[in-house]
Length: 152
Image (cartoon, rainbow, N blue to C red):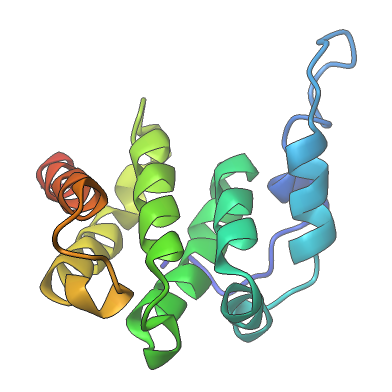
């Protein structure tokens, strides 16, 4: 990961710091600030343990620096025993990475960490509690395989 400095409100919500003439509703970013501002990685990981779906969604709304910092808390949760049976975090994390990789730009700096996490998820895919006889299982597993190739 890049650094251990906790992101500021402006780093979490980059849209409110843009030119005020830009009409952009940054409600999702403001909520991410409410949830994450001042939180270190241990605090943020506790959030993921509490409600992985909500806080994984916040990762999508954050500015790049905040994402680089807080994605590590999500990764720690995904790799922990606390995520056993949490197929929602597996689904939302894949969708978040998929969106973040569009026009990847600065994400290159954490590409190896993300690739390692995707490999871990694929190796331990069954721990997330997907029913193997459903389309959801196949679709999410396929999404991770595509992510792995995009992160190569």
